[in-house]
Image 1 (cartoon, rainbow over the protein chains, first blue to last red):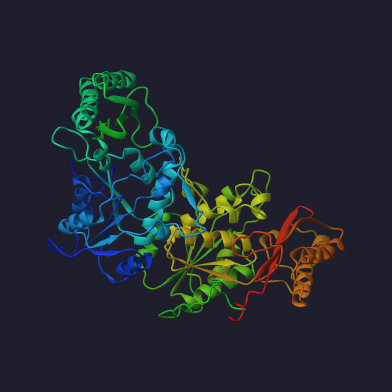
Image 2: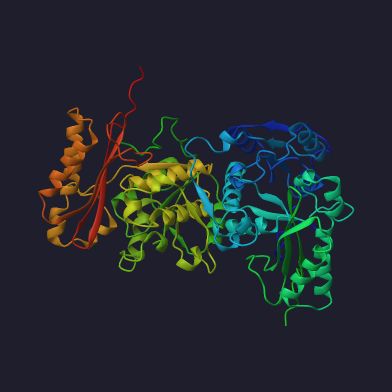
Length: 308
Length: 308
């Protein structure tokens, strides 16, 4: 699976020139430095917004951005407004030095690593609400989360004015929220999604995997196995959403370390729970393993059905 | 007084070439047509968002936009989301043919006059909240008004990507809301304000003046007179906000046709009521004359004070 916009359409234009394989990444912390970089450079710009502590999933986004744009920038900002007060903002893992090396090797040209005050100066108040797509699933468990996500992404799009922005499919609802915002607000950026990158045992890569103890890490691939079992049942012809949820739940139940937060079979665009599957469906889950709360998903039926 | 950004700073660059005095205005109704116009033209773009039924105030915005940009576009959209259910959406005056002629004479190149469905297609849900600046005054009397204004302006900025956008100083809180949004969301557009244009008897030009009966029209200049009385008292050294409000109210009270909605002396940037004036102040009011609800304002002390 290649990264995609989630819609049928023309592929992005090939960039006018290729970047050399390895270059120094320029790290800036001020919005005006990003604007200067944007203004004085030429060609299309791909943006990879991240919260840092990069893994192969992030690097696949940089890689896709390099293939499709003349210039690639990443942002590294652990956005406080998308964490609820009870969540892991303070202990969210950080390693700017390592991240910088990884981005350099991946061929990223600019890294924007602002302070919280640069993004939210005193008196900052504006926020974006994208409506019902942000309400269920992660939105229901993490109050204010998607308001924070949408607002910071809108700001990053305003700061960078990228031609394309890259997000991982692992955060499926985030992707749906951002796409909805971009569509509703008539932003000209193209939102590109890249497939979830997994460890060899199937665990979706996540900066939060660092929270897992050895024992929990050993148990964690059950999340993906459960989703695969759901997909198998779908492939065998099951179209009742509740039957698929049950299949996923029953696999998760085999692993006593896992505490299920939710199991969902929903419309990938609206994130509304389905009753019967007539088209593509987002099979997703959230689960606690010890202190870590992990999410994962698979989309089934995402190839457009042949027209009658 | 010239149009201004409200901040000390360099003047806008002179446009690279002057438009000819009169040209056909191209009227489009689809967002993709605006994007095509934007993409295939060169030079800076000034946008004048309007709700139509144009008067000399609007034309002064077009004029300012022509002086400061290579290309000038206007939008004409009576935005339903900024009207409360009880308000005058249905009877808001419209005359597209006359507006088109006026824009043509004023040297506007493009007119975007979309349908409601073009701006708010089925499923549209996203909205922008700019926080406390939108809460008092018009925001308190017109629930949801500034959410509607901010959202549609953000959309228009996304559609046109103008270098500068022009708004009348008569809608002072609207201006503060839009400036706050642009600053908080790191949009690159420059917001330019142009002075309120008045009839010879002082009445601020407004599309809603058409609602006035002959008798009400005769009484209406009292709004401006009241604000001038407030300014006079300020010029005489009064710095207690409540004293200024009293002065304004007492002038309004002389006119039995006027039903005061509010009289305010507030910070022009935050729209918070002041107690004592230490810097610039927004003297504003809203009042009913028959069926029409009119607003007007004057800013005092807007010349930056000399530094110690």
